[in-house]
Amino acid sequence: MASLAAGSFAVGMDAYVMAGLLAGIGGDLHVSIAAAGQSVTAYTLCYAVAAPLFATAFGSGRARRVLTAALVVFTAANLLSAAAGSFWLLIAGRALAGVGAGLFTPAAATTAAALMPAARRGRALGVVLTGMCAGTVVGVPTGLLLAGGFGWRAALVLAAALGALALLGLSLLLPDVRESSGPSLRARLACLAERDVVRIVVVTLAQTVASLGLYTYLQPLLRQTAHVADPALYLWLWGLGGVCGSMLAGPLTDRVGRPALLSGVLVGLLAVATALIPWCARVPGLVAVPLVLWGAVGWGFVVPQQHRLLAVASSGGAAVALNSSVTYLGSAVGSALGGLALASGLHVSALAPLAAAVALLGALFQVVSLVTAGRAGAPLTEG
Image 1: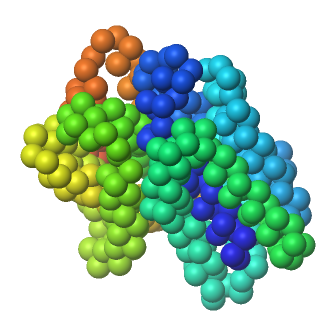
Image 2: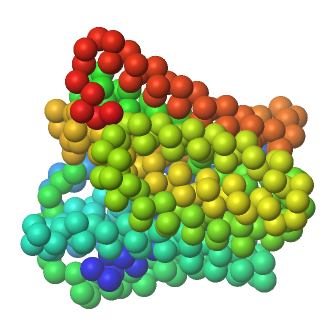
């Protein structure tokens, strides 16, 4: 289990550390911040596509073989990214890293479940998720500290080293079990024929376009609005908020008993948090408040959404897997649109209210969907 958590740590760090490296990448490779942000688009888009495609291609197989292949690709891709002498080689490396991560994460979850008896599977899955959260809270600031001393490439070398350590641990310690395959691409796409599922994942798409899309450009946003030269502390605070949100969302969902209402409130709070960033940035240190709130509601949003999908979908596992793919698709769309906005001459400070507007649209869509379903007499067990 420790080696699975270590791999998730490496993936979590690699997914989120790039937001703090864009300025260094742009200066070194002679591209704009907007162009550098497309390295995040390449990673998240390939992650979104890789997970369902590989679930179909591999089916159920030996866990060690699948996970080893994923970490080999992930590690090699990060070394390629770190050595990239041109922008397009960096894009290729980030795309391959996304493929490796997209293969590893669902395989790690299903393998963790297979290693434990049914009564302890929730705890096993929690270990994998905790590893990814720790990669955000601990790995990202560590990578940025290295980048501050040795350049942006050092952070990617660290991600590769962590991937290699996880690979060694899996090779030596992981039992040769068969992992149950995740839902196939066909099963995920079949969920799109279910209206209730579509309503839910549309909100997920809006939330991730706003949240993860804006996160990509957090470094230049903090620099231009709050005059923060080193974003490491603020990225750490965002990740710490995310850990708190992840831990509290489950008990809160159970207590409230209305996951649709809770997810709508969380998207609304995301709109508030992102809209407040330029205003709070005027007071030194105050921008930390909306960042912590943003991290908490952004990560916590996942739990009630998954709860809703399990309640309404004919195949809960396929619907949850579809929601995961939509999450990374939203990140890719958000980072791409943010880059286009900056390339068109828009000031980076405008990205925060734009993200807030997208989140607000998601919240309004949620309200309209619930009201419409109620008027139609549909059961609101998910609400």
